[in-house]
Length: 465
Image (tube, rainbow, N blue to C red):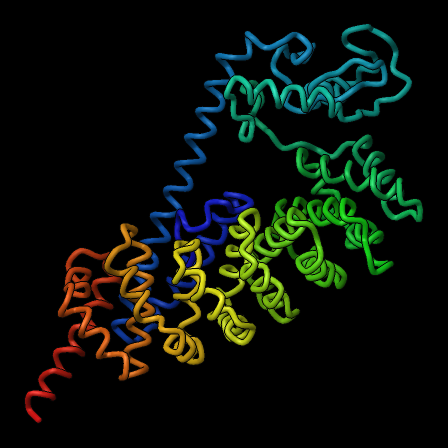
C-alpha cells in the first residue's frame, strides 16, 4: 500500500486521499475475514499506517488553505490595481473579460449577470452579449506577482464566498466547442493553437475539465490530431497528453471516461515510447492518475503499458523518474499487474537502480510488492539482491526503507535456503537483524524476528546433527 512521503510528486492530494480511503476499506474487510494471525496483524499495521497518512494529508491541506487565506488577506491591500476585481476590490482568482473590454473576477461578474444586470458595472455600457473570455495575460501576471511575494495561490479562495463551486457558463461552452472544432480540424496550425489553449484552460479551471466529462465524444475530438499519421508534432502531442492528465485529475467519473476511451491508452503508450521528456513524464503522470481508480488498474495493466513504463524507468531521466515510479507502483497494487511487471523486466531494472543507490525510497516500495511473485524472488537471488538489501537494512537512516528491505529479505530467505549463509554471516558480523528486531517499525520487527527464529532453529539442527 502506498505510504505517505513515498510519492510526494502525486498529481493531486485529493487522488491520494481517495486512494488511501479505498485501501482502508479493503484492509477492514481483510481484517474481518483473515484467519491467519500474522496476516491479520500485518493488515492492522497497514491500516494504522493508512490512518496516519490520511490524517497527515488532511491536516496538511487544512493548514495550507488556512495559511493561504491568511497571507491573501494580509497582502491583497498591496496588490496592483489592475489585479483587483472592480466588483469585489479583491485579488482576482479567475480574471475574465466582459464584452465591454473590462476585466472582472469570474465568480463576481457571474453573480452580477445572474442578478439580471445587462450592463458593465464599471462603464455602465449596455452589453451586446454576456460572454466571458478568460484573460490569460492578467492571470499569468497575477500568478507571477503572487510567486514573487511568496503567496501560494494553489488553494486560494475568496473569503467572502462560501460556495467555491464554479458553474459552467454558456460562454465556457462556446469557448470549449470552438476550441474542439479547431483541434479536430485538418489545419495543423489551428490544431496546435487550440491544443495549447485547452491545456492552459484545463490546468487553471475546473469548469473545462468538467465539460470534457459530459461526453466521451469530446475526448475523441481532442485526440483526433494524434489519431492520423505516424509522426505527430512534438508540441501538439505534449499539449494533448497534458490535457488528458488535467481532465483525469478532475474526478473519478472523468478517470473512468478517459480510460475507457479506446484511443487513450494506445496514445499514452506511444507518448511514453516516442514523446519528448516532458511528454513522457506527463504520460506517466496520466497513467498514475487514471490508475487511482481500481477498475482502471486492471484495464490499463492489460494494455501492455507496463513495458514502456519500465523501459522509461531504466533510462532514468530525472524529470520523469518520479512519475514513472508512481505509475508502476499504483498499477501494481492490483495483484494481476505484478506478474506482468515481473514478466516485463521490472525486477532487473529495480534491482540495478537500487543497488546503485538511485531513487531507493520509491523503487524499494515497488520491489516489496513484486516479491509476492515467485519469479521476482528467483530473479533477486540471481541478481545478488541479498547483499545490497542487507546493506540497506544496516546503513539506511529511513525506517520505511529498512522495513521494505527486511520484508523482501524475509520472502527471499524463506523461499531459498541457500541464502541463509549470507544472512548468518551478516548477523554475526554486524547484528543487523537483531538491531532491526528491536528498533524497526512493528512490521520490520516481526519480519526480523521471523528470520532470527529460523536462524536459531537452523543452528540448533546443526548442533544436534
